[in-house]
Length: 239
Image (cartoon, rainbow, N blue to C red; front, side, top):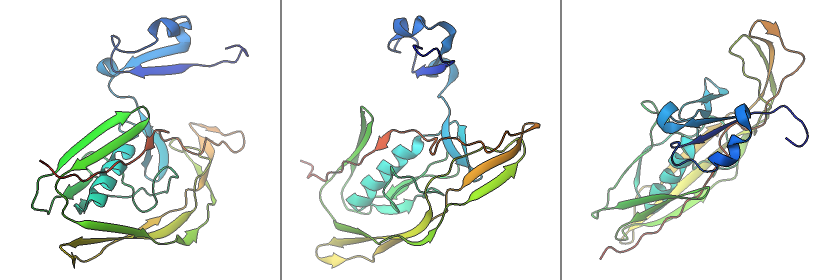
C-alpha cells in the first residue's frame, strides 16, 4: 500500500462473527474480499491434478493426512492404506508422507494390538499434532535408505486453455523406508515402503486461453499451503 502497488487479497475465516481484524481490514475497501466458510464453503488451495499444480477444494489436507499416517506408523499400527504424493515436497519426511482425496485416496490404519487406542489431534498455531494413547504393545524401529534413482527436473512446454505454468520443484528419486515391529521379543515381518517420486518439472505454457503467452510464464515453486506438519506421538499406559 505504501509503495502504491496494485494489490488485492482474499481474507478467509469460519464466520463473520468469529473472523478477527474485521475493523482493521475494512479500511482497505474492495481491496480485501472477506470470504467465510459458513457462507462460501472452504477456500480452494493447491492440489496435484493430472500431474499439474492447480487450486481446488480440499487442497492442504495432506498436512493432516501425513501427520495422522506418521502417528499410526510410529505407534505400530498396521498400514492399511496410504498414498504418497506424485512429487516430493520438502516439508514432508521422504517416503513417510500421505496425500488425501475424498472418495479416491485415503489414509487408514488398523489396530492389531489387544488394547484400545485413543487418537488425539489438535492444531497449535501453524503446527498439526496427532498423539496416540494406549498400552505399549510393539517395540518399533524405522529406518530410511539414502535417496536413489534420481530423476532431474526438466522443462515441459505445453499449450491449451488448461495449461498451468509452474516454476518447478524437486528432482525425482526413490527411497525405501523399513519398519520393524517386535512384541514380547518376537519380530513381525518388516514393513518395506519404497516410494518413487517423479521429477517436478518446469511447465511453460506457449498458448493459453486463446492467446500466446509473452515468453515463459512461471509461478512460484510451491502453491501448496505452507502450514508445517509435525508429529507428536506418545504411547502411554491407560489407567
